[in-house]
Image 1: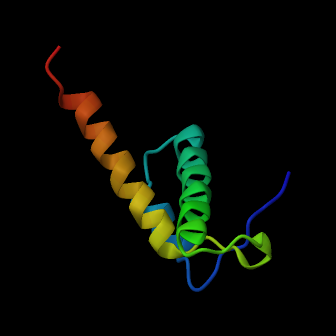
Image 2: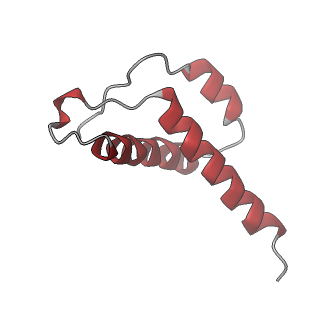
Length: 79
């Protein structure tokens, strides 16, 4: 297992509050998707050497908003 370092300030206590009620799989999805978002951001900037790659708070925020939208659609879509 490889763990990506977090760059800057990623307020983990605040994320714990924001994801209250989420199960472990949902929190894992948030973290995994934030990692992929960091890779996308890094590559979009033209970088190819992954040694400087770090997930930042913005990566988590982008993914969090996306997951909230998806949860809303799943819970409130007409069936």
